[in-house]
Image (cartoon, rainbow, N blue to C red; front, side):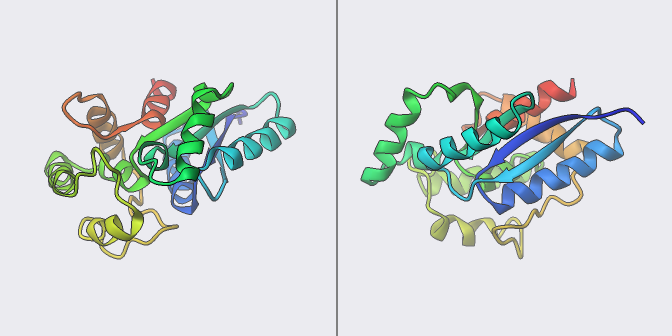
Length: 193
């Protein structure tokens, strides 16, 4: 059996962790030569992300490492901590390792769905001005549960992940008419090609 390449993904929370685990199952079943090792940061704020990065890089200096985060707190800037967060990121020496989801993980999940479902979510986003001012979870969680009934933070409603779901993700990520984007999707697509 051939050794698989390992890629560490520092992720914001438990939902991303659950997604990476599902993605690893897809990669294993389809015999890809790499696997992800998700590590939860438990926040998206830059100082904590940087501390987790330094810890992981010190322990695994030769392992490819990327950071999967939502960009909502970098875009909203509705308090002093968020404004400070954005300023720190702009001058960060590890900025190129950040793979942002616009604007949150739930948006990223919907990008895996077919065009009809995605368009319904985009209509909801426009009605809530989400494309310009990312919603807080207290607002978007009840809305996203209309698309993923029973979804709660820490779970992955995309189980099992299938090739058609990833094709949707990559196509939607590439479509300039869709404001939702994902640096992680672009990174993943490059690895799969």
